[in-house]
Image 1 (cartoon, rainbow, N blue to C red):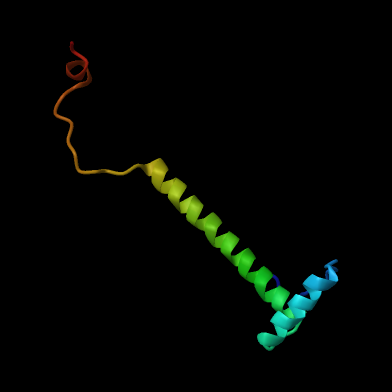
Image 2 (image 1 turned 30 degrees about the horizontal axis):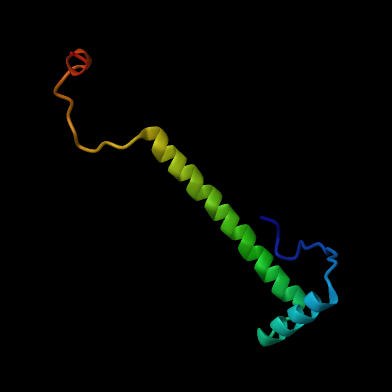
Length: 82
């Protein structure tokens, strides 16, 4: 992860109406529009990282399979007799 002071500016194009709503929302949260967007983007990126980790764990569990406690008492040929 980059150092906390290793930041880069970006430019966004928003409609005037969206920008006005963002300013109001930011003011309600005692922050700036930049602070509001930074926080939301960080949360989004963190959630995506967590989803990816959970998906890898789930796939690994599926690869390993689950032992459900049952024991096979019949062989394949016995199961397929007619």
